[in-house]
Length: 175
Ligand code: IMP
Ligand code: MG
Image 1 (tube, rainbow, N blue to C red):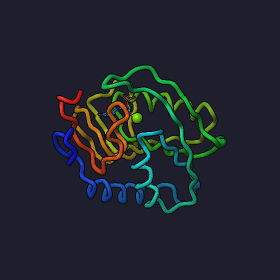
Image 2: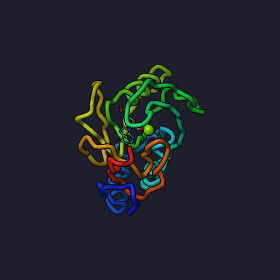
Image 3: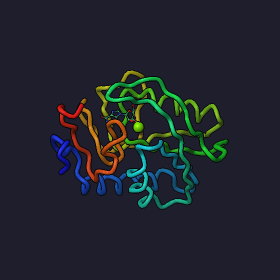
Image 4: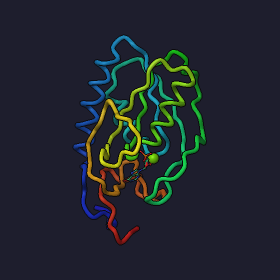
């Protein structure tokens, strides 16, 4: 375990197991459709890769890069890199590392619907339900977690720890 991690919240095995279940659920829900799986850079990368292995559909993938978090405080959202492809009439599954206040995914969902998407659903590895400030829910949730600052499996603190193969709680002494 990394020295800056207080405890592991979701292990690598748990993430793999849950990603398989979610991928299978998405495969059933989107049968006959060709959704675009849209990852939010950079945090979604490990989860997106794990999830995609388990989605058995003719899907495509794309990415959006936003900046919204500095340190442990949410700040204003900017779309820094937009999608490559056209989303008109398409079914979109947004993949995200964590849903907290909901502000990021609220903006992205509206952005994609404005661009003409037919449907937009969210698949998030983690959900901090108690952190919600805007009304938004993910259709697919890996794990619901308490209001603690977590790192690993894509999640960072000042860009560090994204490469950890598990989700852990960051030691208070590292803030
Ligand atoms: P929201 O807009 O408040 O829902 O925030 C979502 C974004 O905040 C995520 O994409 C993360 O980048 C970041 N975030 C929220 N909670 C955490 C955390 O516990 N650790 C690391 N990043 C977090
Ligand atoms: Mg993020």
